[in-house]
Structures are given as C-alpha cells and as structure tokens.
Image (cartoon, rainbow over all chains, first blue to last red):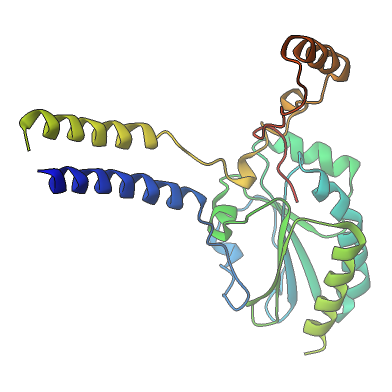
Length: 169
Length: 75
C-alpha cells in the first residue's frame, strides 16, 4: 500500500513538473533554420518585391516597446547604407491595435518595409523570446543570425558586421 | 489502498489539472497591455515613497518589493 501511494504521489509531482517545463520552454527559430514564407501569413501591408536572393532582416517590433523605438534609426541607416547591395529590412509589427502602430510610425518614420502581423501568427511561429527580436536571413532565405533585444551601438555594430558578411557571399 | 485514499489522490490530480490549466505564460509579443504606463510600479514616485515610509515605520524593514509582472519585459 505504501508503494502504491508513493506511485500516485510521484505521478502527481511529474504532472506538475511537466506542466512547469512546458510553460517555460522556448523553441524559437535558430540559425540554420529556414525562415517561414512571409507571404503565407496574412500580413497587413505590402511585402517588397524580389525578396528572393536578397539578404533580409526580419524584425519583430511593437509600439509599446522602448528598445524597438531605439532600433528604428539604426535600421533606417542600415537600409540606406546597404540597399543597393541587396539588403531588405522587413519590420513586422505585432501591435494589437493598428492605431498604435500608425501613431508610432508618425513619430518614428521608417525608411524600410513595415507590415503588420495582426493575427500574431508569424510571431508565434517564430516564437521570439523578447521584444524586439530580429532574424537576419541569407540570400537563400535561411536564418543566419538572431538578435534578441536591441542594445544600442553594440547591436548596431553587430548588424553591420553580420550583414556585410552575408552580402559579400 | 483504501478507496478513500484513491478518491483523494484522484481528486488531487483532477484539481492540479484544472488549476494548472490556468497557468498561462504571457508571450513577449503579448505584453502590450502590461507595458502600459498605468501598469508600471514606479509611475507614482511620491506615493511609493509614502508607502515605503509607512512600511518601514511599521515593519522596521524596507525594500523587498521588487516583484515582476508588469512592464514591457523588453530586451
């Protein structure tokens, strides 16, 4: 009887532990993974043409996110600097309300493509661990670099190095 | 194993299953409402200071109120 009771106890504990693990596990996209086809998600806004064969930065952002705001000037500079060498930045907004995004963009103009993932389907698929998060894709559409958060000049420099390395391939 | 124990453990398991279903993580991209200004713990510095003062007078201790939950959770 004693052992059976222990078994039940162990079972209960296992169930609780399993639930806890399930809730904390993050399994986002890693370098080497193929990035999901952006066109397959019903994103608001227009995706740039001729994305194939280009180095693409997919950045997930929201209007309520401070570091996202900080990242906009950096991404503007990057887009300007590397556009003729084949860089495209696609910033995917995940705001719940379109109005929030529009207001943000009015105050922080974007010189790159902005689309909105209203259903939050793409961001859920990418399963990002923090906001903002960005994925740098090579010319074959594979994830090469992943950025969690934006840390000012440090991240800006990393972006430049990584983009340069992919553009020269 | 008596029936009582079996029923009790089954009830416990059912209760765990029911209550754990309520433990949902807020995903990083769903924190829009939590990131709102009104959800910030430090939005009223004077009020917070008063609360801290009362707490210190009453408890002879201060600090230890750094509780996560609200905010943007960015970076």
